[in-house]
Length: 555
Ligand code: ATP
Ligand code: MG
Image (tube, rainbow, N blue to C red; front, side, top):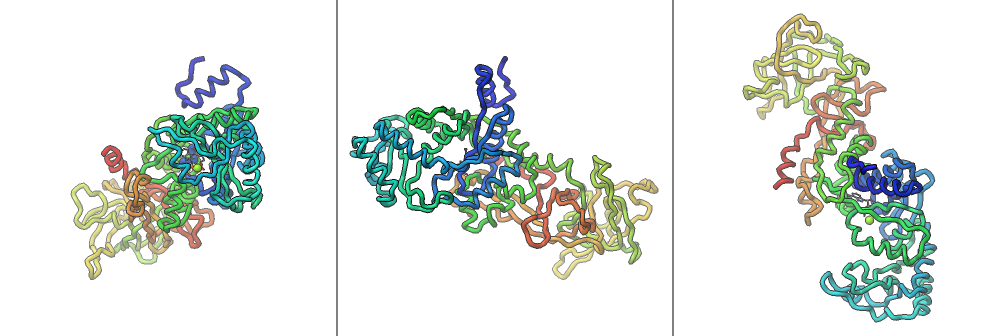
């Protein structure tokens, strides 16, 4: 069988392994640290880990990497579970925690000490840092490196018993202080932290370091493919060293892939946390963040996020994905499923001088242009209407086909109207248009063959529902906010605009859609989190940023 090049390199490796050994199992894990909410980068990892296993009837663990009690929290654990489920993945019974293995880690450390492969170092953190050397200079051995196994065992046990204060000493692996790979220069295995752990309370006061705990957790769970991001490539020799020296029954294999970077956004829990603490955004579920909960609240369907992850693929090349790729997935997923409605975001009043006061007509409007099965609804039409302020221009250029003084436009599903008079307030701002409608031009009647170039949306002023609508734009005005020092200065001041919109009356109905397209304005959804009824713009209909973004990324 030749390799299937339509598959990413990880899937090709797995195919090859199965070809060589049909009993080969696919066991993966998604190992988040519960120190924040998940973001789009995690979604990529979730899709990959759960995806490759599902394709081969394998198993995926959801494992909380809870080895750093000072940063971790039960709230994050719950949010992570909720987000993974929302994305559509199921870990079944395979929910684990690094802390489940604390005793086994401890015994593994003891075994390393007994083999003379680990020692307790009482040097200060500064001394340890200096003695590790640099990329161009080998490190030097710690004076504690030659301690006997017996002495190390005794001190390490006392470390566990809480005899020493934080930072007093660490347990280090004894590997090679001259290794060109800095990770192998006697890395720390355990440190002292007198801190309540969210699951084990005060049972432990020593906690294992990430590299040690991660490699061993993978080995204990029988993970066959430990998929992680590229920055761990240099850690792989250490990963393999731990697995080998601890002599675990199973040897997992680490494979690295590139992390997801999305232009104009942040995918780092630490940086997201900074934004939240500084009050720049409302919280982890702020709809401007590409956290899973933010995107969910914004109205992105899970299917769009899965589509996106599929589209960007899995490679070893670092790159930045344009925001438009994500937004296009959202548009594609909403386009077929959301019903159309009318709503005016920035209302301008129109009075039809030749339409009888008190008269109301109910006009047929389609719920979806491509799917007649989705039916029609009745839209009330009367003398006073609202149109979008941007659909009127007093000094319009020749090619402006919407409303202008003396000009004509079609009101969707209704009549052609002509603008006869412009009313302004004392500041010279247009506040109302007096128009006349042409009774013969009612949509669908074919009575008149009058044609106009523009069609605009509208709502009946008498029936419309005033609603708060939140218009979101990119949170950052620069494509790569992860690499700036002053993150607050790179915030787009127009990332959130709240408007009082006028929505068509059907929104008062019990079964009004929760996610819908406002014709010509974009996709919207009911905000589930706010106390009053308000709507979020999910995404605009077209990518108005595409050009700007291309220029910025190429410059
Ligand atoms: P962050 O910097 O946001 O805290 P992290 O890698 O420290 O990210 P973890 O909770 O340790 O966060 O990540 C869980 C898993 O998600 C890891 O396997 C990690 O490789 C993966 N992951 C995190 N960020 C990304 C990303 N941007 N792209 C792809 N995978 C990611
Ligand atoms: Mg991490």
